[in-house]
Length: 316
Image (cartoon, rainbow, N blue to C red; front, side, top):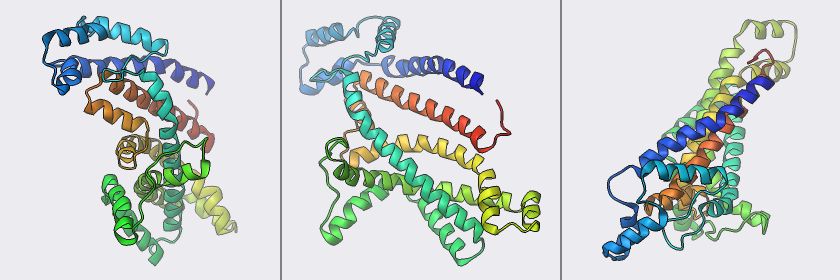
């Protein structure tokens, strides 16, 4: 297991290198110039302004030189400078907003896993009952409702019915923890409830497969209580596919957090990436996507490690 983890960790830099090269090609090797987005938007059509802009940020050099400079700077923790005013350091902006995104992401995973697994277990244990049919209907609705539409309803309907809307002024956790959680719970809840529907259905299916296994019937024939059979034999052995789905759900969370942070005015990594796309600020887009890719790779490794904890028979 230790060798496997070491091999995976050694492969992480090479994976990030391939992702960065592919993204660089998509962002920088394209018709037109980033100078037009930064300067042309303010009405300055002087050709010398474009030339000076490209020279300042090195956009007039060959692409491989630009990529080499960016890669060397990234290895030293320098993700470049924003192309749009006030030309802040990209890494500084990421460090400032990353804790907010991580907070919402962790809350989302917690809500989706707790709600999804609980509903899935109850639905499987009480299969073909009114409770099971109700949960299955709710999960189908959860899978059918888009995240962004649910977020809009959370913002709009309370304002329409009760004249109340979630607070819009973000406060960091270290300053006011309780108030911060009251702000972060809304985007996390909308993202978590949507993803928990898929986890619930997956948990139910996995639990039902294990419930009718031979060793479960043997355990019940020995006189074990249902509670011990469910939690000691069925639940743990059905966790492998659920853990896999939880890891894959992170991709949906990372995608949904972009919209959530924009709608709930959270100064996070997703909102920073969206601003970079809107302003065609390529260093910001490249840096934020690289951070998302790194988080996804690490979570995938953690999921693989959890397999061996849940089922000791699994060895790499």
